[in-house]
Image (cartoon, rainbow, N blue to C red; front, side, top):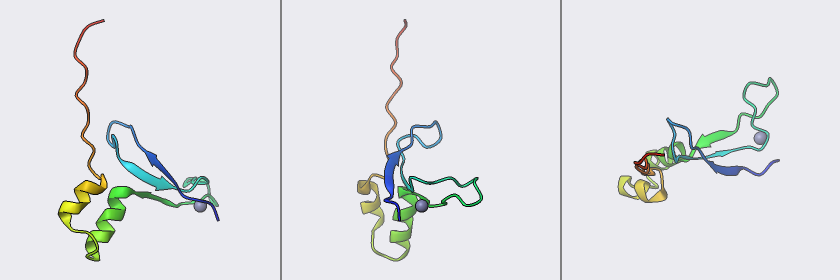
Length: 74
Ligand SMILES: [Zn+2]
């Protein structure tokens, strides 16, 4: 069994979103591991079962504010 790793996405659509995945994550490979979860998805589960309140979800770090682009010229 592999240890899950925590990473942060920096893509345009998922900027600053944390996620967990298996080091062997390879969803397109037939016998590859499909273990992957967004932190936000996990928090959603916790909310569904009543372990986390809405206001706490924010503090867990689901939302990361995207920094303003630096204005200026080169
Ligand atoms: Zn795995």
